[in-house]
Length: 503
Image (cartoon, rainbow, N blue to C red; front, side, top):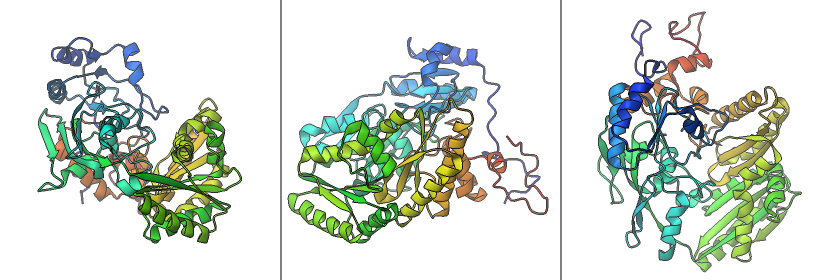
């Protein structure tokens, strides 16, 4: 335990980068980057001012677009020498503000690292650069009867480097795992410009499991330049069951009962009535609009395996009180069932000027309880919310609808989201599932983790990034932030660390 008169350690307060000299940074980077790969005029920086969380915006000091590992090394060495923050960015589709630029730092775009370097159908692996789109891997592997399993809804645009940084999931992660379960090796560069390789081409590696540590680290430890992913065979058959319920609690209970029965579907998704109404108007998937909630449960494998699992799922759903059950009759109908779920985000954009997508995870058995609580919050904050869940693993994505042009609606949406996240913790869950913490959920980290745990996070970061230059101010809350957020205990008027500046 740190004593009150002890000097503040790494991570206790926000880093001070006010002394960074833009002209000096531009001059130094201009010597190692070719023409057209360095931008520093405000008009050129504007496209990089936010990621998928457009509510938070900031202009970077400069943007670097390297094309080789050597250029990445050179940029990081210069930033390390000059004490300049670095924020790595891929496709910019993240939803937590993880790629929000630092106003006194370099935005390091890896968009030009977009090549599939090697695809080995026999080993079922692909070596790709971090700027390669998620779906492009599956498209390249398709002629060999293979694909890359993690499938976030943004897979047509999101890059694999961002997937690794956020440990992205998707509809089929229940059976096939998250990004971390589908990686073999990553290559990256430290802030000091040292190239490191973590993992290997083998299924396991000796020593600490640093691959799992780097996956989901949100660009705070190393800058990725190469990723080796696993590929899996395309199943012979896939079928989807659509089940309607007249009560959201019963639908949530059905999810828990399916898993309790030992069934691990390829995908198990849930949408509430407002969500189904929004997507039905958008894609005409044929959803039952009178249902309070619908479940989508997919089975894949051999025809015999699918038939057996579908029969077991149907039995559980009937016993759980499903009012309607449909089984896809062909591939076109299966894709139509999923089209609605995949279109939930754009559908929300059609019915509201703005929406705020949350990301928390709770125990499956408490899904109904969470949905009931969200309905009460809608009245409290005066905002609508449509709900889509990766129900099989308890990952929820409430979409809070608001209009940023109306006074205080953004603030109310943020408060609404914060209450959902903190309730997720209270229900035995966590504040994120696959979108990451970034800047969006950093205050709620104070609610989930103790001061000792937060310090340990910073110790891990310091082992890779001693000066704290990689994506500073993200993911891990400093002590002064938690103090400001009201999570530090005040006993008998005694304020811990009174000299720490509050926001």
